[in-house]
Image 1 (tube, rainbow, N blue to C red):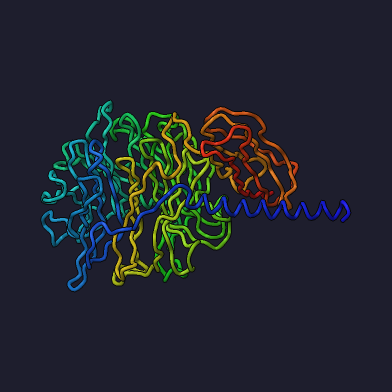
Image 2 (cartoon, rainbow, N blue to C red; image 1 turned 30 degrees about the vertical axis):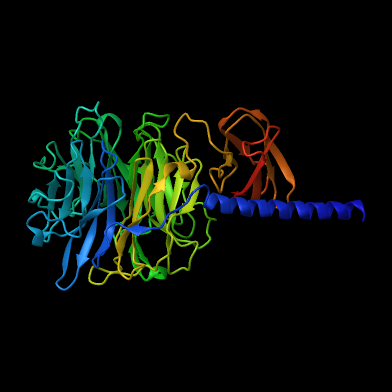
Length: 550
C-alpha cells in the first residue's frame, strides 16, 4: 500500500474516531452527571392547572410556595392554586382554590412572593377589572379577604420581595403589571406590611409602543429591576424590543430605558403544537450572591429570525454587567443545532445562591413536532458556556384548553431553588388534563461548582458564541494539575491549530480561537489530558463541534 493510500486510510480512521468521540461527548453533555428522578405533580387533582409561578422563602429553605391558574368547568370558575411544602419538598399540600374571600369573584392570573416574615402574598385579577391581593401568615392554610390594589383593566402582575438585610426597604414587597389603556405603561405598587395595605399605583414608563408582559425582581441592596416587551401595534402584537427600568429608592424614582435591546418575538399561534398560543415575553433574574457577577442582570426571551436565533424559535439571553446601563448582544441558550426545526418556548430564568444561571423551557428536539419535553440549561460563568439536560421523564402533546381564548395552554413556566436543589415547575397534560409537574434537581449534579471552589471533574464547555464569526471562546475545567492540550480540527480531521499545550493547575479556564483566516464550516475542538493521571486512574478526552459562519 503506497504512502498516499495509507495517509488517506489513517485520515478517514482518525475522522471516524473523532466523530465517534464527538457523538459520545454530546450524549454525555446532554445527561452529564445528572440523575433526573421521576417527575411528579405538586397537587394531583382533576382541575386544569396552568401558568405556574414558584417562590422560595428568603430565610427558610424548607418552605416553597407555588401557584397556578386553575380552571374548573361546569360551572365555569377560574381561581389560583395554592401548593406548598414546608419540609424541603418531601411533601406538598394545598388547594386548587385560594380561599381568600370573596371566593366567587376570583379571576386567576396569580403573582406570588414570600416576604422576610414568611408571609405569603398573592395578587390576582378578578371578574371585574382590577388587581386584588390576599395574604397568608400560616403557610397558605388560610387567606385574608381581598385587598384592592387597582381598579384598572390590566395584565397579570408579577411580584418580588426585598429580603436583603442591608436594604433600607428590607421587607417591602412589590407588584408590577401592564395597564390596558394608552399608552399601555408598566405600573407598580408596594406593601410594607405583608399585603395589608398597598401604595397608590404609579407609572414606571411612558412607552411609544404598547408594553406587554412586565416582570420584576430584586437586585442587591434593595434595588428593584423591571422589564417588559415593546410590541407591535397590530395582532399578534409581536415583541419588538425589551425595555428595562430600575429603582434604587424603593420605587420613588425609576431610571428607564424604553428600548434596552432589540428582539423578534414569537407571539402568535404554533400550528405544529395543536395551534397553541405562545409568546416571547421577557423574564428577568439578577445575581445577588456577592460573587464575581454580583448585580449582573439576565433577561431571556424567545425569538426567531434575528441573530443569534434561527428560523425556528430559540431561547435568547441578553445580560448586563453594569446594572443595566449597557447590554450584551443576544446569546443563544439552547444548544441544539441552529435551524434544525426544533422549537423552544416558554423559558424561565433563575440565579441560585452559587451564582449559577438556570433556564428551563419546552423543547421538542427529542420527540415529534406535535409534542414537547422540558429542558434545563445551566451556566456557571454568566452565560458563556452551558450544560444542557432534558428533565422531563416523558414527553407530552400540547393542546389548547377550551373556553379560554384561542390556543390557550397557559403562558409561562417557572423555576426556583432551595436547599441546594433546583425546583423547576411546568404544566403538562400527560394525564389527560394539564397539571403542574416538577422534579427536584441537585445543584451538584448539573456540573456547577460554588464560586471559588476547585472543579470536581474534567469538562470541556460548549464554545461561545456558536455559531461565531470570526472568534469564539472555549472554556474548560480541570480538578488537578495536569498536562493539557486543546486542538482544533476541520471536518476531515485535519489539525488546524493547537490552542493550549502546557501544564495547568486545577481551575476553570477559557481560551479564545480566532478563525479570521479560515472558511465557514464545521470545526471540532478537543480537550486531551496527558501527563498526570486523573483521580480515576485514566486519562480524559472530550471533543465538541462548533460552526463558523461568515
